[in-house]
Image (cartoon, rainbow, N blue to C red; front, side, top):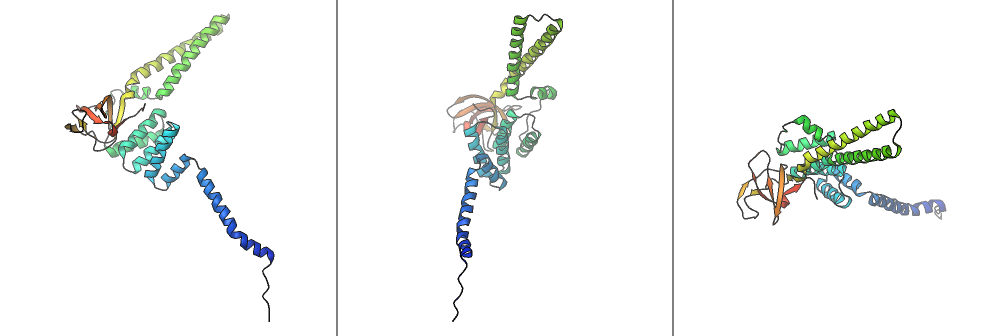
Length: 263
């Protein structure tokens, strides 16, 4: 009678360690997934078609990390895929405050407005408006601050050194003139754009403008989702607003409208 030969020790060890290796591999993959940043996880949810979860994740990132143009942009894309054009336009408008020259952002904002039929009122002077929005409000503020610092620095240097050479005095005069011009231009633009702090976006299709700040008050009309409005004072969970280009004005529940530039 023949006795079956035993497996070689090395082969036996390899078969015994195979399940253990698989466990370590799965554990490593789970750690890699867990180590992904919240933004990467949100982007994966968006790429996988789970737009509602992606939108929620982007909202949480903004709440914890503060405003970021790329996150606002992705949030707008998520809401647009869900057909929620009011929140999508709000997210795009908030991204535009930070990156006013992004062509992809402007294109998607235009698509969202077209889908929601929430067109902006035509500007009386498009060229001037383009110049005013060439930079974000933060960038205009930085320009004013930088120009003021440069002007102050030149004044100190000229006062301390007295710049004996004519060429130096001329260069300092030119620099001071440019700094003063930049400071004046930035200050003027910020003053002209001060009304943007009161801009809001209607969020839902059922949002109604009411005659008084009460749920039982008569409705005057509905601006539609994504419509830009001018916000006023608040009272009892309502906010007074005006719809540009129309006679529609009154009170809307503050859950149905949001400021483009949040507090």
